Amino acid sequence: MKEIVHGDITSRLVFCCADALTVELAAREGLRPREHTLPTFERFEEAQAACPSRLIVIDAYTSEAAGHDWRAYAPPASLCNIAPYRPAVPMVAAGGIVTRRREASTEVLLIFRRGMWDLPKGKAKKKESLRQCALREVQEELGIEAVHLGQPLGATVYGYDMYDRRGRLTHVVKTTHWFRMTTSEEEFRPQLEEDITGVAWFAWEEALRRTGFEVFRRHMARIGHLVA
Image (cartoon, rainbow, N blue to C red; front, side):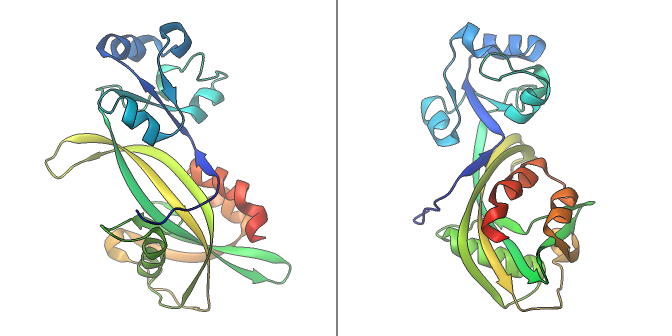
C-alpha cells in the first residue's frame, strides 16, 4: 500500500516465534515466553519478518482477562492458532466510522451482519489505497453514494480462522484502517450479498454497547474524543 495512515493501532494480538516442541507444550500448558526466551512481537510485520512460518498468535485481551501478563504467561485459551498450528496470513482492510451530530450528542452508523452489529469495512483490492478502500467499502455496504471521507482514526488488528481458495484452514491476521466519515444520505440499501440486513444510527455510547466485536469497542472508546 502506498498510503500510510497515522494514528494509534488498537491491537488485541501479539506474536511469538516458536518451534514444534514449543507448540506441543503450549497447547497443553499455555505459553511462557520468558521461560523459553522466545522472541515476541507486538507488530505483525516485525514478527512475520523474523519467523514467517512458525508464529504463535496470542490474544492479549484474553490473557489479561484471565489475570495474566502475556509476556510472562499466556494460557491455552489465549492462543489463537495452535491446534492445529498454522502460520498467520496477513490481510489489509479499511472502513469508516460514519458519524453525525444530533442535538448535543454524536451518533454513529452500524450495520447488522450475521447476528450482530458491526462497523462497515472490507478487504483492500490490489493497488487500491487505504482511503479508496474505506470509501468504496462504506458506500457498498451501506448502499449509498454521498460519503465524505475525513481524518484517519488509527487501526485495529485481530485474528480469525478461514478457509483459503484451496480449502485449507488458515489463520488470518487482519489490520483494518479506520477513517472518520459523514453522509447526508437518509435511506440505506444494505449489501445483502455480504449478509448485511440492517443499517441504523445509534448514540455513541449505545453503539459502544451494541458493537459485537470487543476489539472494535475498545478502539471506538480510544478514538471517541476525536469524533465527539
